[in-house]
Image 1 (cartoon, helix red, strand yellow):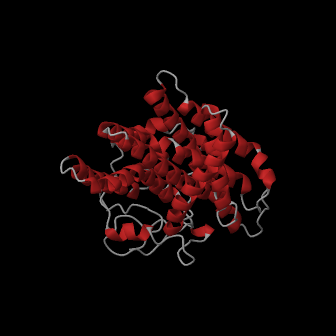
Image 2: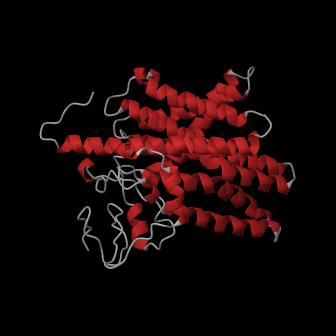
Image 3: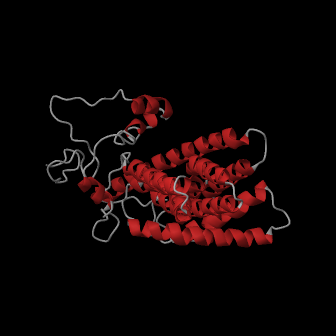
Length: 361
């Protein structure tokens, strides 16, 4: 069947267009717009109506999470980003994507973690402990990363590349952070920790996105999230190992639980914001160091450093209430940059369709 929005020819039986995500609504049926997700989004979407240039609205972003999806739809998601499957800019949909795979990934990770937990807690088999730590450390960062991957509307980054960035970028950013910690070893405090770790992740993210291939704001969000996911997962695994070596199993589980709950608003979101801010400054231009002192980049980077410093500040109430507030604040900025990224795609499509394109400033 042909999609009414993008005219893409879909196989029979799919409920959504495999190219643009448009839902195929049967005749004489109406979409249920009164679900909890729509009600929630009604209050979250604070952008004035006259400034909303991207359709559909934010309330549609999570509309596909609890719906049935075929295996073909899932397989379609994993083939994007190659030389043969990357769409042209004129073919990219500049509306809000409707991610759903991230929720499935989270469910699979929880099932695996529960199985490993049973092996450790009830069967007392120590062979399950490494798997428990690995799955527990990667579950939420990977889930969050999949969300960013689904939100990457240009679909120009292959999934294997993302996995590469998670491992190489995560390890590299941690090593760079250790170098900064060694330099600042006499002045370790929440501020210097925030500067060292965020600067390390920023250097790593920029090393991946400085090439013009990743020129979109949404690309920066995704690559940054991949570096942040690797950093967060490896760090959580380290803390979990320390807890296990202390001999207290309860501390191990509590550590993994809270770090999992707070993971979306920590390293993953912060590195994503840094990557998006840099790509927003770089655009289609070759990399120059002068881009690093642009106000549009520095304001986001300093905001991230401030959030990280506050996150580590040992004041009463910071854990968990202050950190939850910082997590929500981080995601407000994330969605603002997603919106800016979609608007950027819309502008590029308009320019590419103009007979005599106007040069961007």
